[in-house]
Length: 159
Image 1 (cartoon, rainbow, N blue to C red):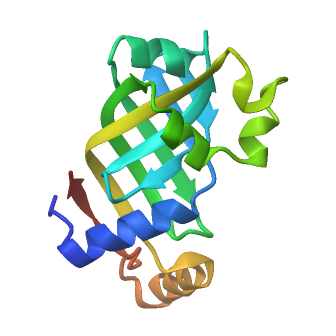
Image 2: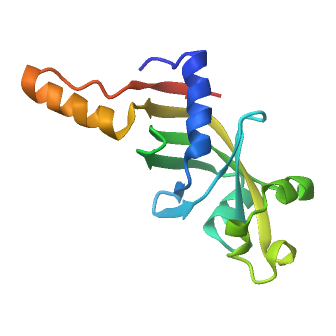
């Protein structure tokens, strides 16, 4: 499988910024939905979670995990491999805090269970597509021409 170009890697980060949620695989038998915050400058993703969750427990152990996203609207499908770690960065938490995060915590940002987790990716397999209309066009064209549909750019992103 080919590595994505520098330009495609930038597209990956831009599209990940438009993804609202994915599935975090904290171990082979546990998958949980999570919303991430993209931090292209640092090359990481952030999660706000709570003490006692699978994500926080995996981060305390510095576990290798997978994060899978499939979002037609953002024109991206990806499986991202990396490591979770706990971060005690109040400034970053203040920067990321939102009404969505607040909905999960009775005492808001001051709730004693609020935890910040950093996901540092090592590599990802990604599909950068043309979106829903492009997908339908490619399927129709493939059925007429008997060629395989062009599903966009597919390759590996190395971080």
